[in-house]
Amino acid sequence: MPVYLSTSAPDFTDGFDTLLTAKREDAPDVDDTVAAIIADVRARGDNAVLELTARFDRLDLTAATMVFSAAEIEEECAKVGPHDRAALELAAERIRAYHDRQMPQDERWTDPQGAELGWRWTPVSAAGLYVPGGLASYPSSVLMNAIPARVAGVERLVICCPTPEGVVNPLVLYAARLAGVDTIYRIGGAQAIAAMAYGTETVQAVDKITGPGNAYVAAAKRRVFGKVGIDMIAGPSEILIIADADNDPDWIALDLLSQAEHDESAQSILITDDAAFGQAVAQAVEKRLETLERRAIAAASWRDFGAVIVTRDLVEAAELSNRVAPEHLELCVADPDALAARITHAGAIFLGCWTPEAIGDYVGGPNHVLPTARSARFSSGLSVMDFLKRTTLARMSPAALRAIGPAAERLAISESLEAHGLSVRARLDRLNQERET
Image (cartoon, rainbow, N blue to C red; front, side, top):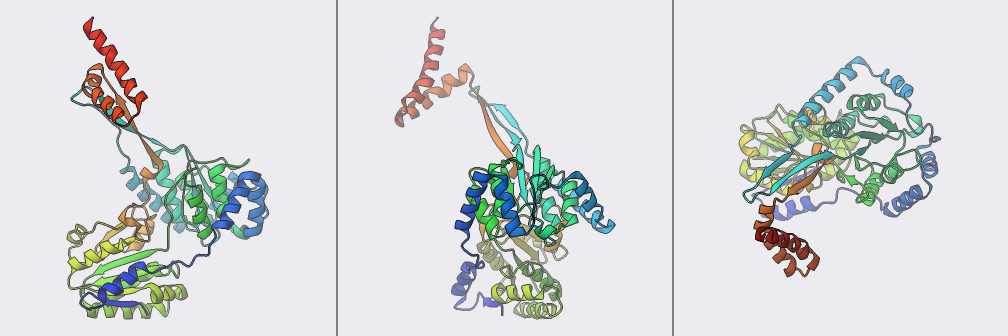
């Protein structure tokens, strides 16, 4: 059964703290295994990747067949039906339009002392996207990762997508084509992350790696961070819905289950100011679980990690939501904009009862790669900014150096960095000599 809490109950604080700190992942300790895989790929390159692919994916490849050929991509894309094709094209168009607006502007100005200052943005040169493989892979994640990279101006964009026993999802390849991916490797696991980070004879190293994966992929991303950039270490999916009584309980139940069906460790939380409505939603969830295709997964998630919380009012609901810092936050209330103004920590906010989270997963436009496990307190979802670097610019005029140089020299002396101070003093002395002549 899900947890039922009320802020009016004397034991609420303990119950809510338990909910916040509950461990939702029981991932095996894979770090030693991953470390060995990475070391093997660094030492033996293609040979290690091919052997590991044969072992874990039961697929024998060569260096030549590690990459999907243009003919293979064409053949697989031809299998995509017209309705799926149209849906992916609409999603790609909307995702691209949204991320186009995220592009930051270069700036340059001269300050009152005569110093010219600014910054400019440049993309990473190459990005690698990880896509979980087989028929369970998600073409929407390809679009969400690859399109922002292309909008940012990344020159070389590659995908690693395993094909266990040779199983290919044509939708993934079609999404990659729509997003402008250059190369698609049919390799996966920690060995794919290592290959993209360090390079092999066939796989050219990239500068940044993004995309979801299992415990082995997550551990590999942690280990290669520093050699390359990564997006985030994503945990199980989660949704928090703040809803008043003026909602259809079945709609809210379906929205809760839309995340519960992802995996048994996902979490779905309802916060409402009406106890009877909370009970009605819980009953609707149980009824939907009788027929849901992924009911075994969704039922385990709802049973082990689900929660219904009753608050005194919606202001208190917003305060609790900020403590949860959810990945997805739906505000199904009469005035969602007013309530959203009180939200400081959330990966994505969905305003009003006509905006189910599932729209955001596919065609809304904003990115669905979002911070989990309360990391929305300090991080954001994937965007073009993840594929850009900001370089600062500064030019001192003689007048500017006269004005601010002595302060730099003074601070260098205070830190016992003599050469720092002398590099400024030498220029100030030259300016003083020129002034005297």
